[in-house]
Length: 110
Image (cartoon, rainbow, N blue to C red; front, side, top):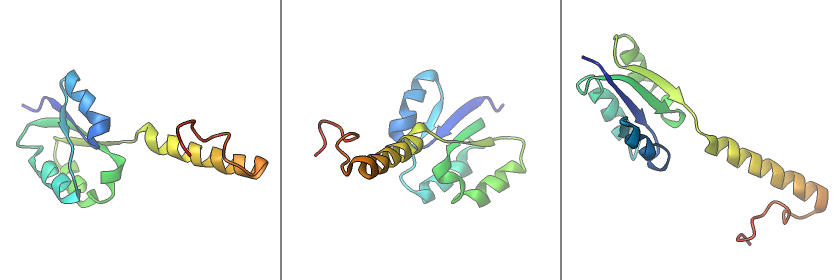
């Protein structure tokens, strides 16, 4: 019976989800992620949320899994990429407006 939910991504992002009862996978590279996907059916995972960084490199494996009833693979993104992009944009705007990035630099950054 497929009744488990899993999440695959960076440890710092998904480890807290373990407290909610989700199975978490934190692969160190694409090969390890590939092996994890191959084992999802044996572990009776119904749904696996996969961080977007793994979606394209694992497209072939995900396409193969989509032909089966379970596990269902769904991608997700996190705030970090958007946050980094906004920080870079603000820094660029600050430099253009004032000639310095001191307005957006943190107090602890030089």
